[in-house]
Image (cartoon, rainbow, N blue to C red; front, side, top):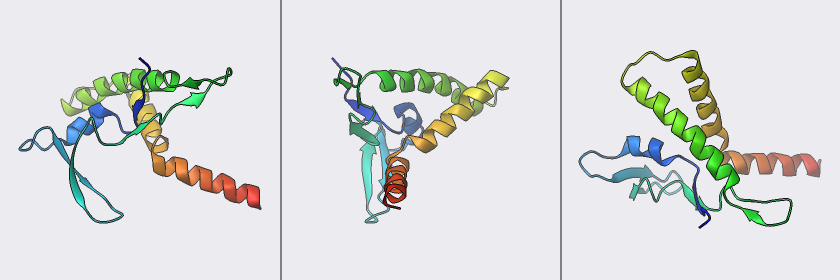
Amino acid sequence: MPKKRHHYIPKFYLKGFIDAKNKPNIWVYDKDDGRVIKATAKNIAVEKHYFSFLNESGERDSETIENLMAKMESEAAKVLNKIKSCSDLTGDDKLIFAGFIACMMIRVPNFRQNTENSVSEMIKK
């Protein structure tokens, strides 16, 4: 079954914010309306088909980018665990984590929206 629920913030990362006294919940602040809501890593920072695209055949591909993200996240999770345990990082660890941080900055809806707005403004001009 194709993957449809794509997290733009990885679940392993979100789990680091679970309230120890209120497992498995994460407290989420909505900066638009000021509400604080209770969520789980499974159900927050996720959108249906977020990383899907139409392939050369015109069919929806929900797997390619999601699988690449999963591979990167798996490697980054290992490095984050090293950081948490104050273990020494190798040069490869540093590269993996730097790539993960860079990806985290550009994979969120805000970045996507800002990029679309910028392109739209450039086309208008």
